[in-house]
Amino acid sequence: MKEEYFELIITADEQYIDALSDAVSMLCDDGLEIDKNQIIVRSENDLSDLQTQLEEITAPLKININFTLAKKANSDWMGQYQASIEPIEAGEFYIFPSWHEPKADKINITIDPALAFGSGHHATTASCLEMISKYVKPNDSIIDVGCGSGILGLACKKKGALSVDLCDTDPLAVESCKENFQINNETYDAIWEGSANNASKEYDVTIANIIADVLVMIAKDLKKITKPGGLLILSGILDKKEALVTEAYNDLKPINRKLKDEWVTLVYQKEIDVK
Image (cartoon, rainbow, N blue to C red; front, side, top):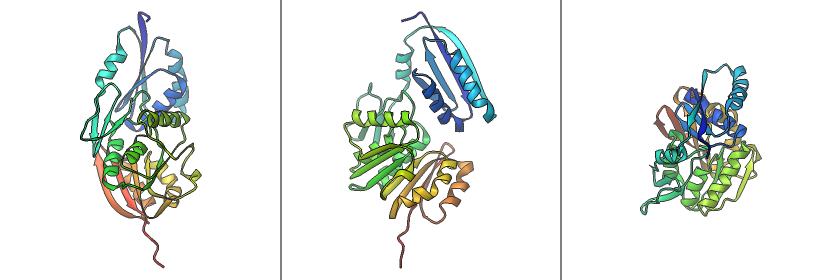
C-alpha cells in the first residue's frame, strides 16, 4: 500500500449524479462513493487526468459542477466506507452489503454498492421496492428497464415472479446485474444491452426506474410491452417533472403514487380493451 492516495470530489445538482457516476465508472476502475449531490473517487493513482476528462465532457452541458482534487495520507478508507454503508428495509425487503448479516423475517437481497448502480439507498429504488412488495405476485412475468444493479428484478424474483427480463443501455450495468443475480443465487430469463424496444413479448409488470425525460421518450415502448391489465411501475421522477410523465401516460389508469425526498414513483394499469 502506498503512503498517499488521491481523492477527487465531484459536486453537482442531485439530478445529474447518476449520469456523472456512470461517466466516472466508464473512465476509471476505482470504487466510487455516492452521496445526494456528490461523488467521491479515491485512488492510489493521480486523478488529475480523470478530472480533465470530466471537465471536457461536462463543459458543453453548462451544468453547475465543481471538482476538488487532493492528495491524502493513506488509511483504510475502504474499511471506513464499508462501515458507513448500512442495510435498509423497504417493503418486505432487507437490502444489505455482504459484510452484514441477513434478517430472518425479511426477503434478503445482497448488494455491494461499489458502483452505485442502485443499492436501495436512493429514494427511487426504495419506493420501487415498496411497490414491488405491494403489487408483484407469484408467477408474474417482469421486465426491469434500466436495470442498473438488478436490485428490482432480484426483488421480483425473490417474490416468486415466474420470469424476469432485464435491460440497460449501460454495458457496465448489465455486467453488474449479472454478478448480483449470481451472488443472490437467482436466475433471470433474458438480459440485454439496450432498452424496451428490444423486448419480444409482453409482461405482467413493467418496471422503469430511470429519469422523467427518458420515461416520456420511451413511453410508447413501455406501454407496448405491458400486457392488457398489467402494471407499469415508473420512478426516477423529480416532483417538478411529474407533470411531463403523467401527461405521457394519461391513457393509463393511475393506481398509486409515492413521494419520497422530492422523488415520485407512479404505478399505472394498462386497461383491458373492451370490444
